[in-house]
Amino acid sequence: MEATNLMKKAATTLFPNGEAEQRAFLAALLEPEPRGSAVVWTGPRTAGELDTVERGTLPSWVPDEIDLVKPGEKIGRSRAYEAGEIYPLDFSSVTAASALITARDRLPEAPRVLDLCAAPGGKSILASVLVRPGLLLSNEVEGKRLGPLRHNLARCGIRNACTQRLMPEEIASLAPEAFDLCLVDAPCSGQSLLAKGIANPGCFHPSTIKGNARRQLRILEAAALTVAPGGFLLYTTCTFSERENEGVIEKWLERSGAGFCPVEVPHLASLRSPLSEFPSYRLYPHNSPGVGGFAVLLWREGVPNGDSRTLLPSPLLDYPVGPTTALSQP
Ligand SMILES: C[S@@+](CC[C@H](N)C(=O)[O-])C[C@H]1O[C@@H](n2cnc3c(N)ncnc32)[C@H](O)[C@@H]1O
Image (cartoon, rainbow, N blue to C red; front, side, top):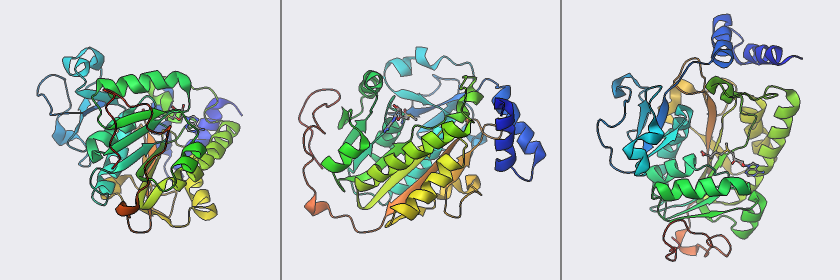
């Protein structure tokens, strides 16, 4: 089937009752408009430096640490960027921020955080700002993406962080049940990139979607093994495919997700996905400042057992970011 027809078919599945909404969704992908970018402040906000959208006009769930910068603003040339005070993100990542805030209230002080699919670093930086980890392990499997990841974490002065380049299964066997929070910002078909004007051939093709869903399931299986009792797993993508989003989570919960349950993120109530019975959240490019994405927050049943924490073995802490002082292990 031709690419546009695959896209139209997807629109019909996603919005079964609304031809107007199908058309708006397709227009956002096929005729992308310039969009602003979100920025997360890694320290105190300095007023007036960036041309930002009035906070009162943003959705109420946007966390205080995040601003939406107007289209056309050259964020990378700003003083705040040079100084590492901001990190730009697509606005859709802000759903992850809301989920992190929900988890934060139930996490221990200075939690151990694992970002399994970390480059170029956006979610690691969000987690650092919002949950203040005692230890942040930012992992990236692609060697060529490690440099930008380390550069971004260092530029933003991210504390208590180290990086690694391991397969999720390797981390799971080195550090079972060792993290209070595991982030899986999964590699995906990236359908939302079209709304940024980035060509992504084949992103609606069933074989692309099937391959990604398989990989996502494997990553999730490993990710779940790293989560301590009472801890959280946050799964996010930047695609619209039901199979890669609600479908993967449903399959994983049935197969091996015993002990995990999806939890409500109250800030995101208006973005609740109608495609799952459990709480999960979708953002679309035709009705938000972001290009689109999916998020689900899962809690592992049990009680955090801080006293019996094992020390993380080498090589997990071998590559600290920033000054090479020994990382304390919370
Ligand atoms: C959506 S991107 C992550 C974006 C990042 N979290 C951020 O916010 O800046 C997904 C990442 O997963 C990595 N990846 C690809 N295959 C993987 C695998 N099998 N296991 C873990 N990560 C993988 C990709 O190299 C890519 O960097």
